[in-house]
Image (cartoon, rainbow, N blue to C red; front, side):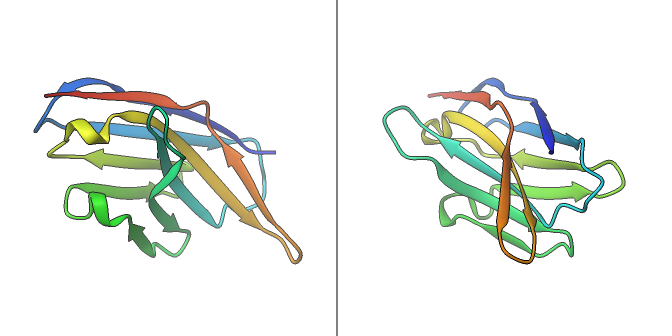
Length: 119
């Protein structure tokens, strides 16, 4: 099992910045991919950014150029630096860890952290 603990959410004005952190613990097996998802009220959960253990990174088009995902493998921690925040970035942000086996992809989730961007 993998436990994920997020921190860093809060209330910020449009144009401001926040940094989210997610610390992973509990498994002696390597995590292949860490990711951030978000879910706004009344909407489906959407992928924001991913980073693999080899540091391959992908972003949703809506956050490219504004958000930066990074990973400290030694600390099993992933970060999401969010700049130039917009009201439409308001959502609960969830940390996700994916661990691949020969037959399945195991997904683990954090409890979520609220990000609210005021206009």
